Length: 265
Image 1 (spheres, rainbow, N blue to C red):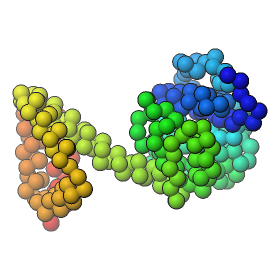
Image 2 (cartoon, helix red, strand yellow; image 1 turned 60 degrees about the horizontal axis):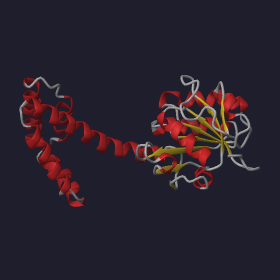
Image 3 (cartoon, rainbow, N blue to C red; image 1 turned 180 degrees about the horizontal axis):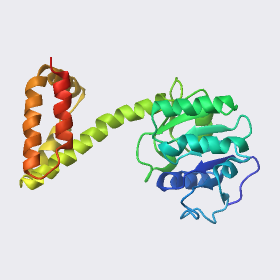
Image 4 (tube, helix red, strand yellow; image 1 turned 45 degrees about the horizontal axis):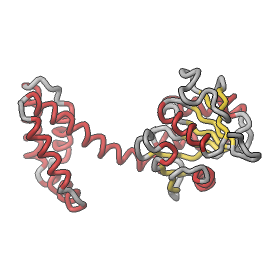
């Protein structure tokens, strides 16, 4: 497919699972993509695609583009922007899609601002496989509306938040504390149940409890946890001891015990 005159040129830094899927959808939508990944020389499904250029560095990828999508890692986020800045023209937009802390996102915005590069904080709120560019995203920062407008024109599903870079990351990570914490507690409980020969019973019980949950459940959990913190802390100490007896490291059980003890009057 030939690229029409005036088609957007977008750099994608990081061509792992998420980055390669986003790049593929951008190409399908008519954008030209300049990609870079220090560990992937020829990304599967992208190398040789019309409109896709493999580059040798962040700076080379960011040369002559209108938007850079940084999809590498939270550890590499700041270094990627620092490496690309010398090659970027003033006004080129930078969007950080990494799962980084709000503080890192703010550092990126400050660094970009010193060089005339607007930075948008983008949080992907679901796994990218199966959704690609249509994965639900939140965007915040001074340039979020313009960046979202460009990406929506290419098929992205993105909601703009009224706030600085870091706000989108804050929402994502708050959800992560809840969802990933719940997920790892379930995994630990089922591992212990399997060791006790009760995994089928607990699996069904967890499913029934989740199916009955609603907003009132959240209020009841919060109120009950504070009201019964002492008793529940002792209960989780017993649960942690049981897991140890079953040969299961009680990481989440001990964390729950510590939180209850902190909340106890």
